[in-house]
Amino acid sequence: MRDVLFMGSVLASATHEMQNIIAIIKESGALAEDIIAMNGLPRMKHGEKIPQALAAIREQVDRGRRIMRMLNAFAHAASDFPEVCDLARYTAQVGVLAARAVLIKGCSLTSAPHSGTLPVKANALLLMQLLYLAVLDVLAAAGKGDNIVLSVRAAQDSSPDSGTPDARACVALRASTVLPLCSQGLTSLAKELGADCLAEPGAIILVFPLPEVAEGVRP
Amino acid sequence: MKALLFGLSVLLIDDEEDFAHTLAGRLELRGMRVLVASSGEEGLARLATESFDQVLLDMRMPGLSGAETLRQLRSGYPDLPVIVVSGHSSQADYDMVQALGLQGYLAKPVDFEELLAALAKSTGRIGQEKGTGQ
Image (cartoon, rainbow over all chains, first blue to last red; front, side, top):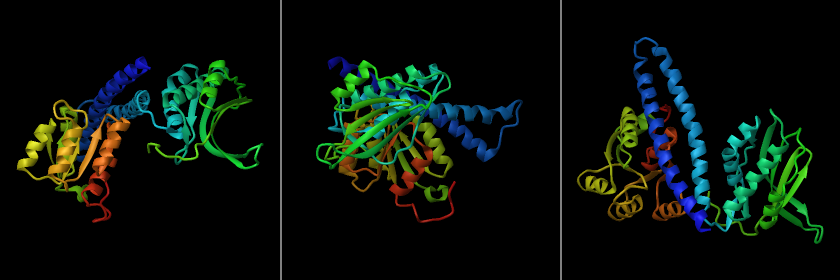
């Protein structure tokens, strides 16, 4: 645990610095765009390439910003211990952080939009680890060009014992052409978190019980 | 939005001087008067001699921290609106600034349009004028 806290602390500090650096690059490029918008392009050889270069800076800054925000949140997950975690927020974070692994496999990953929070009782770091392992398990079965769709939703099923509705939160990782298997690591971690892990043709689905009181979720 | 914020005086407290001066330049292009202070101490000293409509405050700074600067701002200038602009976003920081009462909390790198909207809302200038969006 001490190692995790140390790593989280160093990573949080470093990502904070990186966000400052990205912010300076972003504002410098944007200031140049503001000035050009007010005064027009400077008349110089190849001056017409300046907007293209500034647009590339803007796009890459946005890309870096998304990754760095998620990485910063990941670092803080090591030291923040909310009683319940917002499954929707952490799923979106893992979707961004897994982008490199997805790219290397020649696949793509799309996070389906979800409005509102889905609180589940879990350690944030273990929850992110579970979600990341699920992405890796789907990738292991995927081929080049497959698109993985990551989505979260609340669901209500009738309990076989009482017949009353059970509130659940589900994360689905779908890629229509794959036949994924839940690895031992994924299965055992899901069990540790009180979640179910299901593999079916075209999908891995993680099912979490919803806590009765959904308090303490950071917006 | 530009017309709404024209003439607004802003104290920007941030030790990242390249960031602060570039952001100040963009706000000044929209008609605002911006003074950059590179520490909490300098910011509080400026406030003792000049008045501002708005403070933009970083959280992680050497010397007087953003949190302590915010406590002193709340104590000495309770009506002065403060928006935190920070690259750091721990649960503890977030809870602390919420408890102290803020007009906004924006993560670096800042979405500029979001910042302009927050400034307009924070200073009560939103809704005073229509059709001036930029």
